[in-house]
Image (tube, rainbow, N blue to C red; front, side, top):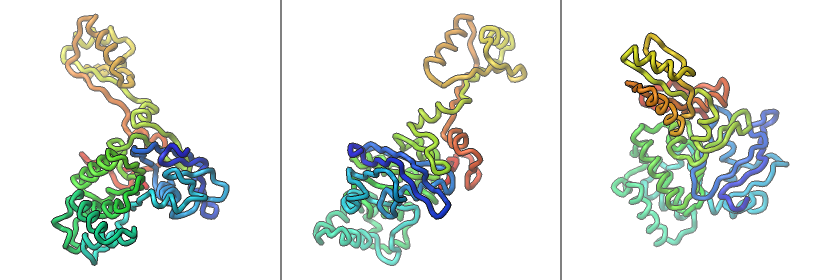
Length: 325
């Protein structure tokens, strides 16, 4: 367990009769992004609070190691290795961005020269130097998020918990935040990410776990999770009715749409399977006018694994569908 940045076995948490986490197991390799998805009330934020030592698990929970430290006996050492950025900003709007950073440096017991050096470096890294002397209350949502993460990095944590870090940001600010997260991981930081946005997990996470009813419903890479869900297919469309009929005869296992002159075959989207279908057409001397490949996405995975859970808001064109907290 201690070879991983985060490792938890049998993690449990209840509030009265309400079981929030029902013995879940989590393993996060160092230097990766791990994303926890789940519907509203699934327990994602509770898991973050336990792993970041903000609350305690139920008595009888199994071992939990963070940064190589057992939380039951070395919680203080674990705290020294982590940083936490919640969905609600910890930025003090009454003081400047620079003052927020220097205050965090004081909390980490850095000397004044060291605090000033780290503050200047992080403000530059997060493109906040020009706004450093302005009250944080004047910052945009994206700037506040960047300042929030910069403040988290003052103590040079090896592990960062990001609890819905892009909630409420516009698409441009969200993509800027993605780049920041990628740069953190490139530098060796481990990121534990909860998010409302399925596209975000797909873009960033090395591994994803789906939490539902207090248990891990599935875990794997984005591609592994997508392969769990049936429904992938290849669709071939023709403009020549004769070519369509010939293809239907050659691909007799395909479902037909005679009106659209289209054929559909189940597929896992692999190159091998696509090549096999094209080889069958080539052998028959047939060429499709249009070929499309559909593979299940994380939206399909989320809805299949979480049953009746529905998004907070309807999806909008060119916007990621939202999972839930």
